[in-house]
Structure formats: structure tokens, C-alpha cells
Length: 136
Length: 136
DNA sequence: ACCGCTTTGGTACTTTAGTATGACCCAATA
DNA sequence: TATTGGGTCATACTAAAGTACCAAAGCGGT
Image (cartoon, rainbow over all chains, first blue to last red; front, side, top):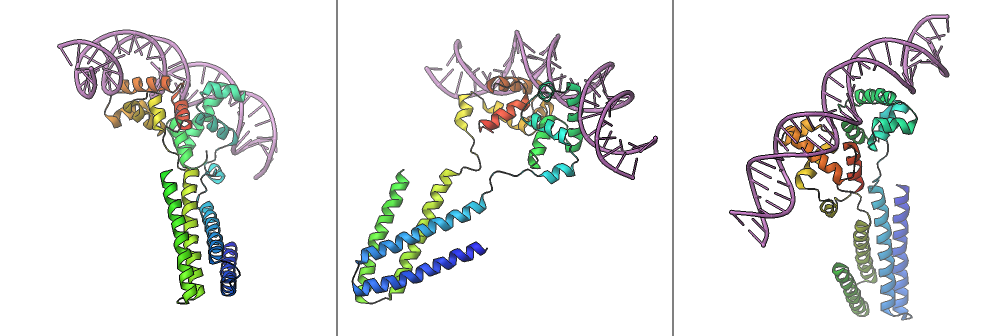
């Protein structure tokens, strides 16, 4: 908000400065009208681009943040979350076990717990739900 | 590209028109300098915003477009694609069959074909690959 | 009418996935 | 010290998923 005020303040200042400048140069005839007009045009063209860029940047936080609170809320443990990530990567229980140096049985336990906590019937559904909850 | 040319053509036209207008009004003294300057400023401010918005839209396809060419390239048929969407929604073969009014056997066939075409070993991996290819 | 391709569906089989249950270890803690 | 929670692993089971192969029906194009 403070930023916006600052920007618009500078904008008004720029207008006033240009008023004075144009009045002075045009009445004295030092500089041709074309140049004055061009300077004014260019200035506001750039200001327009700048303002627009700022406002657009605020509107698009396109990379979605992970909701860590939601993870805690669902009581998903660190290990389980780790397994969840590997599931969403498309790995099998065996493969997950190999990468984490655990037996397939352990992975199955974690997966089962995850399905309950995420209220899913299948691992595919778990991934879908996890994504909709922004925890993945 | 044609659009860009059109836009810049109109921009140049606007500048020239403003040159003439400012020359006329300022020399005859019909209108005050402030108004002329304001009009010029506002015009280019708006043009700046417009141009910037266009260029940014091209740069940020943040809602990722579905690559239909890729789908054709992989020779994924309409039915198979339909099944793929349901898989990513986390449905089982049985459930997909029910929603599409097909037997589970048929879904299995489609899934098997999909796995080959997507070069995946599991349905979870298929979803992952499909997403990375922007076909889902 | 025939061809090529998709769609559909089936059988029989193997492989993963998932459930249920129990056990052991370990660290934090009441 | 006894309890609690997380992590690990196993067995035994059921349920899905996936493979391989086949076959019939439908449909647009030549």
C-alpha cells in the first residue's frame, strides 16, 4: 500500500513537472513541440508498463505453496510424507523401499496409514487428494 | 505477428495525431497546455498498460495448456485419453468402467495401451508422465 | 464390399496393492 | 519406570492392477 502511494505520488509529480516544462519550452520556443510531446508520451508509456507489471506480479502467485499446517493437521508423519512424495512420483512400493532403504512391508504400512489419513481408497486417489489440499 | 504490426501502426498514428493536435491547440491557444499534456500522458499510459499486458500474457502461460499435438504424437485415442483423465482423478478400473458404462475388461485394455504409449509401468507413473508432458 | 483402426469384451494368468494383525526397537515423557 | 508414538518388519490374506492373447462389432475411407 505504501508502495502504491509512493508510485502515484511520483506520477503526479511527473505530471506537474511536465506541465511546467512544456509550458516553458513551448512558450519560449526553445524546443520543438514534437520533442516535448515525444518525451511526455514516452514517459507515461514507461510508467504504464511499470504500473502494470507490478499489479500483474501480485495477481499471479502461480507456483502453489505447500500447506504444512494441513500436513500436521492430518497427522501425517515425516516418513509418511516422504512415502507420499514417492507415490506421486509414480513409484511402486518395492521401488520406494529400495530408494529409502526400507522393506516393502514398511512401505505398505506407511501407505496404509496414509490412505486412512487422507481418506483415500487407492494411492492414485491419495495423490489427487494431496494435490487438492496443496500438501504436495 | 500481424497483431504486433497493427498495434505499432496505430501507436505511430496516435503519435502523429497528437503532434498535429498539440501544435494546433497550443499555437492557437484554444485549450490550455495542461489539458493537452494530460491527454497525451493518459493516452500513452493506457497504451503502455495495454502493450505490457499483451506481452506478459504470452510470457506467462501459468494455467498450463494441454498439448494436443503431443497426444496425437503418442497416438493416444480419444477413449484412452478419457480413461487417462479418470485415472488421474484417482478412480479404479471398476469405477471408470461404471462411469463410462464399460466393462472393467475394456478399461484394463485401455489402461494397458496407455501404459505402453506413455512408457509407464504403473498408472501412477502414467499420471506423472502425462502431467510432465502437459497432456493432462 | 473390403481395409484399417478403434472400441469393446472376454479368459487366464502374474504381479502389485492394500488390509489385518502382531511383534520389536527406540526415544521422549508423564 | 511405565507409557506413548513413531518406525520397522513379517505373515497371511483379499483385492486390484496389469499382461497376453483372442475375437467380434463398428465405422470411416477407398
